Length: 131
Image (cartoon, rainbow, N blue to C red; front, side, top):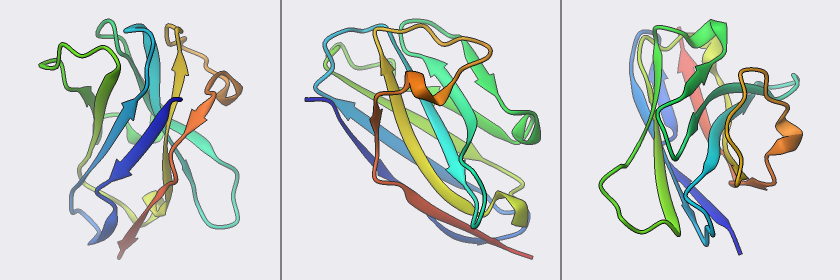
């Protein structure tokens, strides 16, 4: 059973930074696509960033390029677990949203990824950026 646990949400002023963490457990393969999605109030969910856990491929939505960085913990030799991070710098009020971690197992990230590929989701963590 794949499970995702997120942490690191909170409130910050515009221009501030936060880091989100997501640990996936119960994985069967080292090759997965893990990503962060967000859903602002009253809006649809959108992809923010994703990373291929068996390599270095990363993808970002245009609005966060240069401000957000997705990375992973490469120190662990345990392929049943994987932790990814989302470092968010220069946060803006429009970044306010519920952020979700998700994983597409046994899947290499694509440049144009549909969220339907992600079969497991975390519970979400709120990010609020005040002006």
